[in-house]
Image (cartoon, rainbow over all chains, first blue to last red; front, side, top):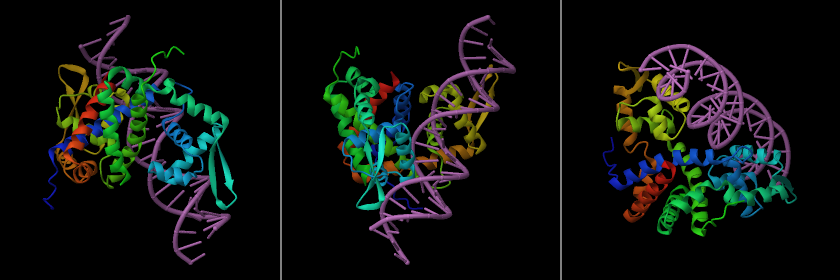
Length: 148
Length: 148
DNA sequence: CGTATGTCAGCTGTACTGACATGT
DNA sequence: CACATGTCAGTACAGCTGACATAC
């Protein structure tokens, strides 16, 4: 029974806090989205595409740490909504490069504005600059953990 | 319109980081769970019950910031698995108090141990004590935001 | 051939809304 | 009566696995 788990109290506590907060944060962010808004997954992909467009479904899936089949579903919904296009890659017949449409770019921009950004507004109005820096630092730490 | 208070760069950046990280973190934590393991929502409820047992479905829903119908589904699954019991409240015929069974208590304990705690292990092995404190501090900030 | 990419189908888990019964 | 609590039904979304075709 490998007795050697020896986790420090801070590790256990941090893990509990993170788990607890993630759930509520996610529900809150989602609830903050209006009716015609993008879903959580859609907004993530759109945001990622604005940061570089030569990506395929598999690339996006790897970046988000999920299966390519799961990402394909999200990309399909964006394509159905006319926000992205799948373009054949002349150099590799298997690949279909995802590109933002004009409307997709507009939505991505709008989504980055105050409208959908409930969280940013909260961080602005209820936190000090120091607290925001703490959050940014913590996210960087957590990112390193998931990145493995 | 009317979004007159300009958001500070740190608020926008923190919001983006948080959104990006919680998605991947959630998938990672879930994937770290083995086959017979508790689901994310089940584990949350079980953990919460170990911190006080006189709660109803509605109490738990309020604590997690979700609808009571949603929480009822999770509680039902735990009841089906024999980990909790719903007991009638003699003082109020509407209420059904949720209590851990012996097996439920065992599982909650086991879940808190190293086995299911992928995140705690990561925080232990890949972070400094200072970094863990940063994470804890950030979670406390975020918790204040969702708590509203 | 093996591997990478993409698509389709089916499943689970999470959480929502609406409608309704019942108890205070 | 209104209000709280709980249950049931239907829906949407996110993500998984397996199976398969195609292209490198």
